[in-house]
Length: 232
Image (tube, rainbow, N blue to C red; front, side, top):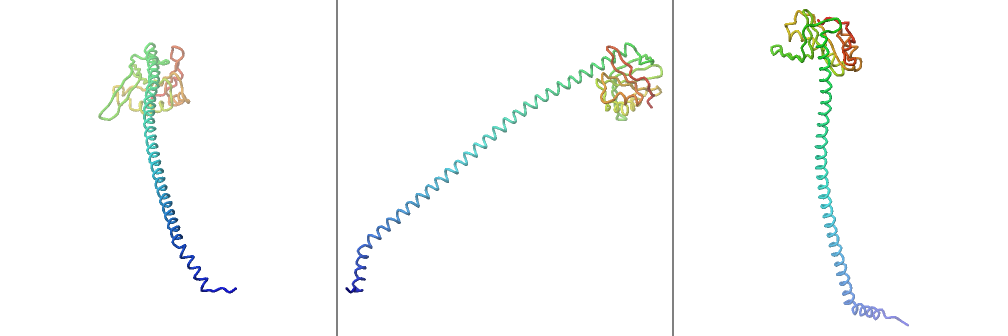
């Protein structure tokens, strides 16, 4: 059997032409469907971005609000803490001041009663003496001053004696005493420290400086050192 090429070609064209309209329709429908799917995907993507953006904004706002609330609570807590620390500091300072006042009263009353330190006797006693010399720009405060006809003892009183107190008294207070009180310029000057307790051998340092060292034994003054030197 022989095939006629022309006939076969024509037959194929007829088949194609008879179905081309339907095929085009199907392709068109498929294209429209793909376009709709693409548009839906874009819409879903845009909606998703909006949701993410909104969530981030809400999260940032919540975080900002939480931070503000935390900062406010922190400020309140800090304010309460500072107030309590201030009150505590005042209480502690008050205790320190009370101890110091008690020590000053004890030594002043005891010296006033005996009017002597060791074998040295005195005629006058003064306490809490303050003086300022504006012309020389110097000032001083002395807890107790004992005097007789030719000698004077200046007493520094502390509840707990430290080396810093001793050095300040010896190198500064005693040094400017006669400048502030020229009336005693020709008197023999001695220094004394009095305390209820000793910190890190402050009393030993006082002995080395040649100061009277006074302590407390019950309700009486204890003379810890009376091997003294004139302060010059």
